Length: 344
Image (cartoon, rainbow, N blue to C red; front, side, top):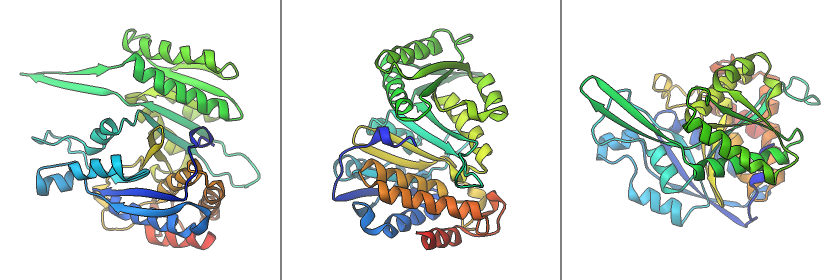
């Protein structure tokens, strides 16, 4: 797994900020809370703090990310669960994404997205078992008349930090293989800085085999032969594309979590968006938030609880009798939750 390299200090309690935010975030976050509570004494005693943010909150108050939410996460919480945020396709005066703002406020420099399939035989390895490390980056947009520009910022510091944690996790995994994703044949300055900086981390991890792949051919090979990849590290745009493509290989975006972190703090978020087309229908596959919960359990020293939750989710998917529509079933989110809790 990817979690071993993230392990932090064990503790007796775990205070988690819950930010359902928009759309189906309000459906999957309660499912995550129930799964955490069901683990009982196998994990640090959880305490939950309900927090506000999102586009819908912005339409009511004019603020997408309240100061109280940021202060609570900085000063009172060990971790956070973020549901989903609506992203309007047209510019809305005064609005900017609260999840992007949180990453900056909390210095969550690494976005970790494990994509792991479920083998039909539990004794066998899944065909897809990879981790995508996405470097957070800043995009500044300007517009003048009919001309629009977006300035992409790649820094040595940010590339070094994401490169180091990607090497660290690769070193903890059995294959010890890392692929740097870039497009430096075209973007030689920005992507060139990224690939060179990530490569320099190899000096401290001599057992890790480092490869490179252009982003377009990486997506092609991901669909043709996903088993060649172990840990992948990429700038933000490429990482978004690769992790969503990889989700198709395991069945659904609802199975892929995202963990944004810095030392001693983690914020989990499903890869899927707010899905306004299915809000209120209770149809979103909640397994990604269960994986996030398992990550919290393990990194805070509760490996047994993490293993129990992982095994329960895998069993439900493997049996295939209680699944949401995105996985070919007819069940609702709460029915999948009930089945996972039974396995626990």
